[in-house]
Length: 359
Image 1 (tube, rainbow, N blue to C red):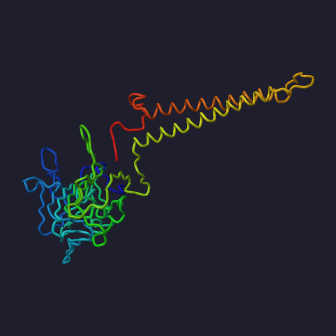
Image 2: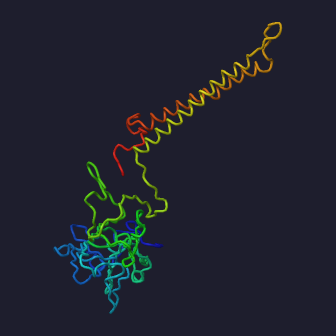
Image 3: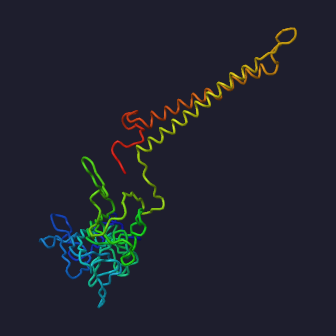
């Protein structure tokens, strides 16, 4: 029994009974007809797909319109509200371009009278989707309920005026917490933004990549407001900022380690000097003698003499030798981690990357 539809495993189509699919399934040089959710369009939107060029719309569109969030939008019966929560679409200077493929993924459906706006984030418990069936052909023909969640598979979203972190549910700015707020509550103006969102994203340069923020001439943003915060570059795994830590500056860290090693060397040398001085003193004490009458030297103390000899040996082994060993180890650390190219190739343990920098 098939409990859920798995893409690829249960066939190439998640709705094998979709009208036109049996004849136009992408094989034998045919087009592929598939369910494509109707787009919840606004007045003034320009929506373009391959169908506009005598092709087949395979759920890949470009929408030229105004800023949009998809939050709180309503398109049901006689009730229509495409503005939604947090959108700047009723502001001048808030144009947007949405390049999106796979609307309503992973199982897009096409229902009469049902449309979908942009899904910047995954939506769950979608009742209209749960009313539909997914039908597959492997291991044999079957039908299961739609899981009721949907997302847009991949997009590039460009907006002239938006609240990007709020709309895409991205963890708040690490530089200024008040940047993460819905319109009407923010303490700084909105901004222009470009967002790339997909299952996986690759940026591949044949030479190098530079990610740059700010600059001496960047004093105001595209909304005409002064830039009050020196923005940084943040790598945030799992959209979770609680474990976020600053990236150290390699040259400064290297200098810090050099100074630590120098301090440790000075401490080691001080201990070694003290031990050598103490050894000489202990040796003198253990071999000392006095003049007795009539001017005859006394014998060495029967306790101090052997104890002094053994103490000298222990101090040499436990202090002098260990100080020399520590000094050698510190030199190894310096050579291994603080000198580039000490181990050429993949085994080079130099702490600074030869390729990547940050500030």
